Amino acid sequence: MMAMLYLIGGIVCLLLGAGIVLSRLVDLMGPTYAALAGISIAAGIGLISVGAGPLFHAAVDALAGRMLEDLERGQARARARRASEVQAEDSESYSGTEEVM
Image (cartoon, rainbow, N blue to C red; front, side):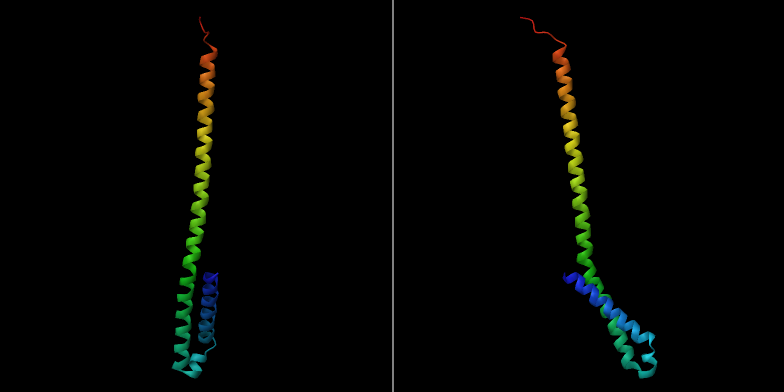
């Protein structure tokens, strides 16, 4: 939740800084607005990077978990297939021989 708030705040800061630069307030008002735009853009980049880190890690963890589940399912299927093949071989070898008493 906090990561999303950081991302939203970063986007707002970037838009604010870009709006100041694009509206030519820097030309009209001088270095004060230039500093405000620079600080706003830097804060936006910082907030976005702070917010994107946990979201990126969560996405990677989810993908790795899904891949691990797929791997475990595949291994379970392979074990079941091998067990059924061994059982089939055992039943074939026993059915071909007769017990002699």
